[in-house]
Amino acid sequence: MKNLALAACIILIVYSCTTSKKTVEADNSSAQIGDTIKITSDKTEYEIIIIEPGFNVWLNTTARPEGFYNQTYLENKNIFYVQAWNNRVSQPQRYNPNLYEMQIDYRQNIDYGYELNYKLYNYFIYFQNKYNQNLLGGRVPPF
Image (cartoon, rainbow, N blue to C red; front, top):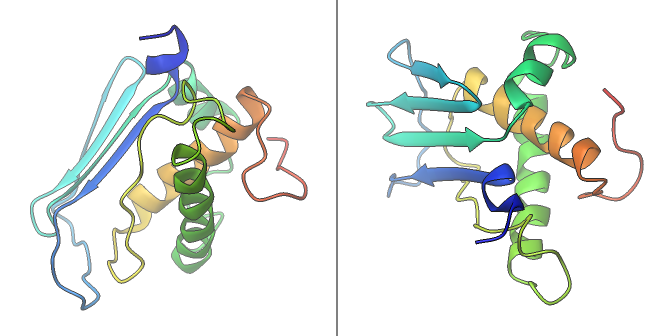
């Protein structure tokens, strides 16, 4: 495994088989250990793990605060970011496979809740700025 392997590792695992929109309620739990953020929920059986040195500090000091964006905005952005990310994962000859290691299973018919969408969206912003990547074309937010 190369040096950047852990630096750009983000995993989103969704175990839902239904097509109806689900809502995440107050049973969410979030744990932060060093530079790892883990968000889980028993109701929707999802888990997101973000392992990225420096992301926690950036999220707490530089990112827009929680509540700045509404959940619909974050969900819409995440759909496009995940599609672009997964496209790059499937093209290791074109895009750095050390940056784009794993596909993200993000389904737009599932309501993952605000916290997961907020952290996933901000990870994409952080990732693009840190590694000089541009997932969607156009201007990457500088914060």
